[in-house]
Length: 287
Image: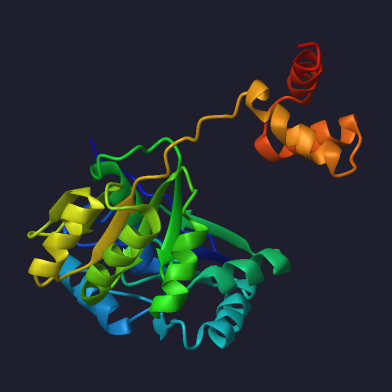
C-alpha cells in the first residue's frame, strides 16, 4: 500500500523530530519536509547535511544555523520568514527540537505573533530510555542536564530527593560517574537506576541496578556515547495516623494556640484530615 504524505502548509513553523541514532527511524513525513521546506533551521548544519546525504535527500530550500548561541536573533528571522508565507522546518542534532535543544524561542515568538506551529513526531531519547529502563513509566519528569559544578549539582539533586516520579536526565559520558556518585549522596545507594547508552545504535547498552552497583560500573569503565540516565522516584511515605499526632497538637496548644488552630496547623503539615485529627484529640482527653 502506497503511503501519502500531506504537503507542508505555507506560513508555518514545523518542529521536526530526527533519528537519535538509527537512520531507519526516519519517517516519510520528515523526508518530505526536508525536501520541500523553504528554510531548514538546523542546530548543526554539518550534521543536517550528513543526514540528508545518508538518506539520499536533496534540499530545495535554504539552510541556516539555529543553535544556543544565536537562538534569540535567529528566532526573529525565522518568525519573519514564516510570517511572509514561507515554511520553516526546525531540526536539532537528534530527537525533538525544544527538548534540551533550540526551538523554544521560535515557538514562543510564533505563538505571540499568531503564526502556526506544528510538529512532525519522531524518535525521543527521553521516551526511549524511559521505556527500556524497567522503571515505572506511569508518571515521570524530565530534568535535562544537571549542573556541572559539584555544589550546584548537589543542590539540584537535593531538591529532587522527595520526587516520587521516575526522573530522566541527560548527561555527558565523562560526567556520568560523578553524577551517579552525587545521586548516591542525595538518594541513597539502593535507589534503582538505568544508564542508557547509544540508544538505537549498534552498540546500544542499558546498565540497570542499584545506584551503588551502576556507579561501580561507571567507575570501572570508560563511558562513551550518548547517555540518558533514568532514576527511580522516591518511595511513598507512610501517612501519619491522626492518633499519632495528638502530642503535636497539644504542644502547639501549650505554646498559646487554640485547639482549632493547633489542629488545623498539624493537619495541614502532616496531610491528614482535619476532622479525624480533631476527633482524636477530643477522644484522648476522655481518657
